[in-house]
Length: 188
Image (cartoon, rainbow, N blue to C red):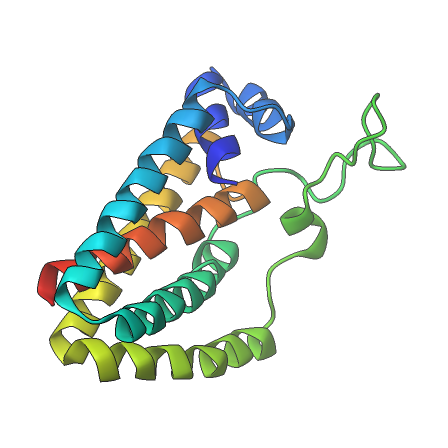
């Protein structure tokens, strides 16, 4: 999702071309660059986390960060419109190549209230781990970092394609997790 989002946003000149690039499974220069940068940053943050805490605590904090960042996907999914139409003019919703014209997020709609409640309940153990091993201040700063990542992807998605796609939801998870880890490392 992150690579496709980077390729589409910076490889296309208009909304439709960006969405077409994002749908294409081949990886372009911007996608590779985004993955290299994010992987490098993730490695640096893990090393820094290991310098400020022991191995088991770092492992639990990484697990918690991954869990909480996956819950962050719900924000753009609920708050932004789908960038691709859920229903196309084509009666079978396929293009000339047989691919569905609407993406998964457009076809399945936004999560309902019950799903949101379940997601918040599922995040509680991860939040407890963050608080237990990082402390209140680091947890709060980490959550600010997570929200900054969500905000960045939401704003960029609206500017480039006018909403969300499955790829931008995946990019939200990756960027918000990096923001959370950056917040942890910065304050621990």
